[in-house]
Length: 281
Length: 317
Image (cartoon, rainbow over all chains, first blue to last red; front, top):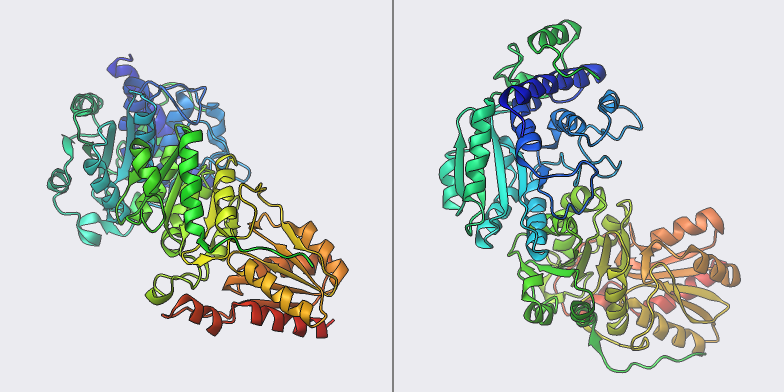
């Protein structure tokens, strides 16, 4: 178990990794990546039982599925810094012949990635399949997922959400990154999601709300609460309220940083706001 | 000329059901998923015998494909079942991203392919599925000809690691391949020796090809007949060897002539041994309502048209 300061330091370094990856190739998605840094750092370093030597089937391990694959910079950074592959490999992000494709894939054999994602809306279904396999295998570990809030506009999610409660998939904890932003604007303006808490409750899920998903302690207690609610015949959802672009003041809260890379000056400013803690790659 | 005996008409989908049930006994990793068409896919027996390994997902094919992909993570071998239309076109993106690109060991099993769903009409038929599936890198595409071969293929794909599209149909058709015959993915079955024309057929049209060969024989034309049950990977060697002997070819399939077996054969010949080819297939059209027999006749997917195209292609040599 890490202490809070260690997790904060790691999160700051992950933020540096995110902006540096995206800047280096002048493409990628920094906004959602920055917003989800605390969640993924906590999950991989405080919550999950997992093995960086990596086996695709992951029997006896907790598994994580990233459904909103465009936030690959944060996923890659957290995986690398958890020992799945060399941190220096972050240098290859989105470049030719890289295992770090723009959106994560199993195709290039990157340890830690169990499904291609990026075409939105498919991760929940895959996670349910993995959860059902765990049940058949008598494997008591848990499946975790992350989805964007805008991603819930894809209908396949609601097929999966309905399936999970109807079939008591209670070894699944699905987290929705509620940052209220998507490419074209706020979720409210593009296609309002309505009352997500009541929607999940109406679909038969347990719901945990994390009001500040960019606070390490809140994220830990939220996931722990979700775990305590799991295995009781219902799937569990965490509504994780985050700020897109969190940690870089000029990116925060704006949909404009969903998929835009910082220029040289902006990179310098972002790095100044997130000083090196564990060493750059 | 070799003769084949129809041991009694049976539906290919029942061959799938029988194979799946057998797999339930012999391979504990096999699981099955269905989108509210358990009876149509003949999955009832598996569902009854192995309820813990059967997943009823409801009318939600996209979710079914995703769950199937996820089940492989944990070592399961999922067989999904629904109509061919809903197994492919409806869920192309889910198959592309979560199954093929992710290299997941999912067996997409599709019934009621082609025109022979009949009266339900074009919304429930599909004449594009072979094309959609064969274009996906890493996807194996199989279209079986009768009950026995469908059963054998169902057993064989469980032992093949990687995504597979297995296509079969609804109507009862001649059952003429050997019971418990071997099935080798990617290996064509040479049904009959001939010297004047090669006929390669897949699915329900294999029997029609044999019938056509009989008609041709009565006219003194000798046809080499090949059953291509695996469209991808294609047994190019068998096709080239035959065409080198006969000098021309007819391809026959219950599918659009664009994207199907005929096109794969044409590419093979263009690269290795150019020769005249005629296509027995639908001509870039949707289907319509009618009895299976009426539809096959209207669209020329029968022995009479195969024989006619054989004579046409021989004249082009």
